[in-house]
Image (tube, rainbow, N blue to C red; front, top):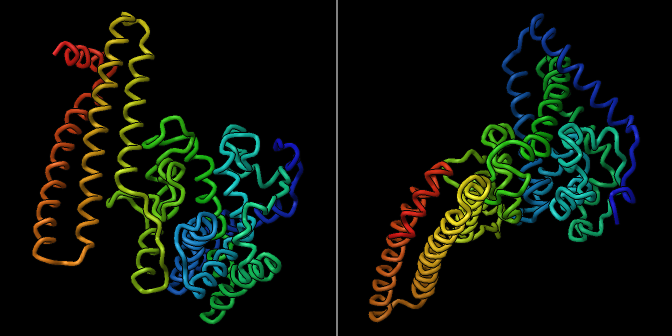
Length: 393
């Protein structure tokens, strides 16, 4: 079935008017209001709270919980994520998740709801303003069994108006700043959260680093990750969509994973899915190997026989590196199994021996990996020379 069978070009006037009004109030009314009245502390706190609450409800809730089921959450947390997710005015959790699952399943094809192949503008916002999509909820059977998700879906207008407009304006009114709350915490916040979220579909499918899959349009973009609570590490996410983390390295900005982790420590989340670090490292190495091959093959002015010899040497180095990684992974797995056994004198000796094997395998891999990194970081010409010297050696 092609996308033409499930989508058709059409002006979605409800979306167009809502986007235009909120954006105009934010862009024009916001500066005028601030110039005339300034921003009080209650207004600033309300704006920040709603920015964070709605933004995280999309990333932690709509995306990682409902779309990918990367973890399980307590009913109270599920309700709060649905409540503030509705306040983001990005449609129901059911529709959002169903379309996102199609995006992953049919990425960059005609059936991808917001395919970057149709252009930056289409992927960013055009698909919601000028295309009518017939959503097939068959891919969201698990969500259709959730009473809260279905209640939000059937009564979405009530959920979104109450959580996204009435509550912040009411809180603003309690502090004497109802107009400020509407302009800043409603219209300004909606506009900013909208475009931050939209950047995942547009910017992160056009700009950034393909860290784990060099042929994917999804890229890792640190600045978009900063704007979207960690969602910008999009190449990793498309390679490992079920992981509750997007920023998998400790230094990567991913407040969404930190929130999920904290919820788990508090007993409000469980079954956090984490991809094996060995699988992640293997994906990085495969991407680096493919990139190095492409570097060599794109320089066709080189003698063909030298290119073939360099590619063969690169392949052998990559195989050796993967073999060392496999040895390390097996040693780690064996060690984990031994440590899970009942403690005895014999088991303690086995644990000590297993730990030594892990450390030795890790050391061997580190040595091989360091040589690999030194090799592939060359420019294409120097890479070829290094590989040819290696083959002669």
